[in-house]
Length: 574
Image (tube, rainbow, N blue to C red):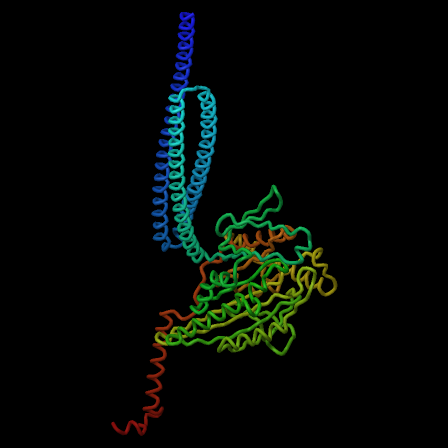
């Protein structure tokens, strides 16, 4: 019996030894898996180093792009002769910036992929750990339990180190991305400055797009979804439907949240040009109810471009009072049903457009009031607003039924040099284009809408002809309407011209909005030529002074001697 018990104990000991060897094998297999995961982590570290090197390459490319931009600034003063080179370089820099933006987006995607892969690996490791824990739980010895606990602790430390390393990598990449975005914004600002200086040389019409808020009438239409997007600065996208999107680029794009102050600040340099002797024309274009009058005039508590421009002019005039003498006059007219009417004079008869000896169009009999202060201008604008033709329809309760033209003539004389400069500022609030099916216009409102659409169509023909200005002898149909005939001075090449294109943001008006933006895009391509300063040049001033000196000498001689040679009282001294 003792021998049998001894044999059974040996047998149990051998079974325990076998189980211990199996557990040891499993332990070694788990250690091998741990080594494999450690190798994968080291591979991730290597990949991180490669990505950092790629970012450094991108940074060097950005530095190279910045140096190229600086060279562009130096080349800009060469003017139109080097215009093609500037455009090519500007296009290349834009491509590089777009490429950098694309690479940054790809890096973000790579970070997201790394995080996703890490999460999957963690799930696999946790599953394997759970399986190992179930297998090891069957072992009864305390030593094996301690080994399992040590393994779990080691795995937790590895997971924590991995997570920390990935978090640090993510933060570093986000810092790099933020830095590159800031550099991209600076490069865009510099590119805009180069673009504006190039537009001055070429004389392009500057176009500013403004989107107004959604109106109650649009909410009632049942199709008031906002279809506008602003992917990058100075660009707007209109989503006609889920499959069609129209993208436009302008000198500035203002969303519905933009303020009147922001709108005016972009246009204010042109106002300063008026006091420097340039002719400036600013007009607003868009469908009826799109916010043109709000942009140009604005309510009493939030004035628009007209009032702010005039305030800025008087401010600059006062600042220059010690150096220059300045006189201003203001006139306001409207074009109603193809008839020119003076809004300041007592006579409401239609006025005629004439052409002077210099080939400039003017309105015969138009009254001009002196403007010595802002109060004088406000009084004139109040009188004009009371006389202007307005009406109501389904799209707008206070729709402008005429084109309003406010003109300020300025003459400045330098007190030191005597040089005179003549400038003018034309602020034009165009009546809106109308779709009769939406406005339900009838009777006189229908006739007004037809004349408005006709004159705006004529303006489109003029812009189309100017867009082909490179063809010698190209006819420009200015005389097809009173509006285009009056704008001939501004669009004929001697003025700095800017336009606001006002649009609605909703799908209900998307067709009209796209038509307005297409017209604005055509205007932006028109090259009027560099604006000319109106006034005396140095050579002419020199000859004027010589003539004045000769006149004074002749006057002095005539006072000293009479025509018969008899000495005067003054000559008896000799």
